[in-house]
Amino acid sequence: MMERQTLREEVISVNRVVKVVAGGKRLRFRAVVVAGDENGQVGLGIGKALEVADAIAKATQDARRHLVRLPLIDCTIPHEIIGKQGASRILLKPAAPGTGVVAGSAARIVLSVAGVKDVLAKSLGSNNSLNLAKATFHALTSLCDPRMVARARGLPLRSVWAYPRLPAYPLESEETPPVVPSPEAGKLPETVEEEV
Image 1: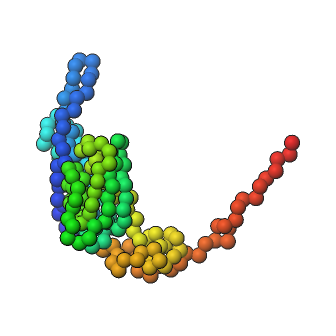
Image 2: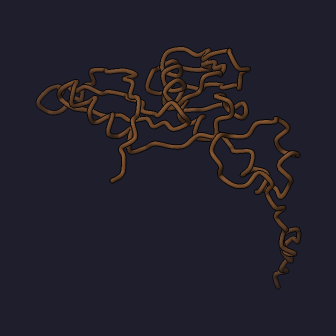
Image 3: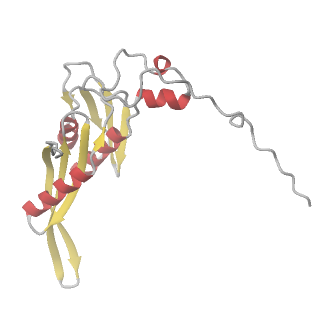
């Protein structure tokens, strides 16, 4: 029998939203929830319902459904990155051990549930909690694993990644074999002259 993994779930925001229909206004609640194992796995979910509890339950289910694995290194991110969503932009930078999560509002919740313990973050645009949470999630899911970059470029790992540590989970072996480009890779297509 498979054990169900234990995830930490945090509610980022619960807002009342209104839809205007022919008969008047229809009120609902929208919940934004982030779920993660605090070890490099995180998911973001949104749920709407007539009751707050139902909206949170739907958002939690949505967050569990959208879990992704992150390439964390010593509880920080491997490189600097900017995440964007709507008018919100967030800059994330790796930090030295012991720095903590230097972030505000929704970004702090997403980063801590993901298991990022040392990171610097700066909100560069709108601080709307939904868009900021989505921008942070976008930045985290856009992180590149050094082993994958080395393999794609056909270079040895140490020429791409100078730090002594690598992401905690093994995607591939540390020494990636160089990718040999095909003979057709560097050639330009032959020009075709049209007859007039």
